[in-house]
Length: 81
Image 1 (tube, rainbow, N blue to C red):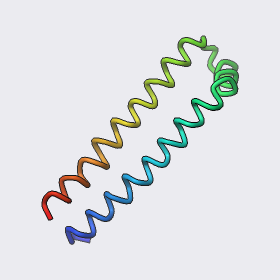
Image 2: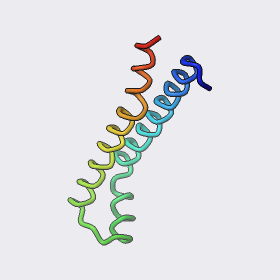
Image 3: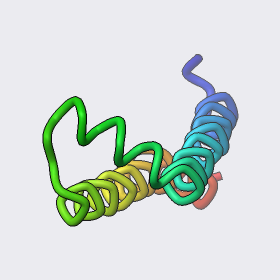
Image 4: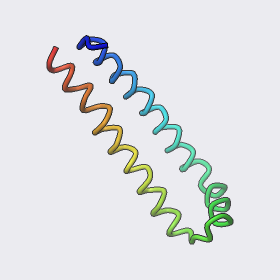
């Protein structure tokens, strides 16, 4: 597993899988907003504004983590090859 091509493939697939999870999460938060809010409001007693802010922070943080830990290493390995 010390081969540059293997690591490039690994990070490439990791990026694709995480972008897929990101898109599913974004779609779920967008499409099922009312259901997600009602469920979380019962569990955590949060307001709708707080839920919206938390959802926005979650989506943004996940996107940032994908960029830093998946896409950037893949891109740097592609540039090295």
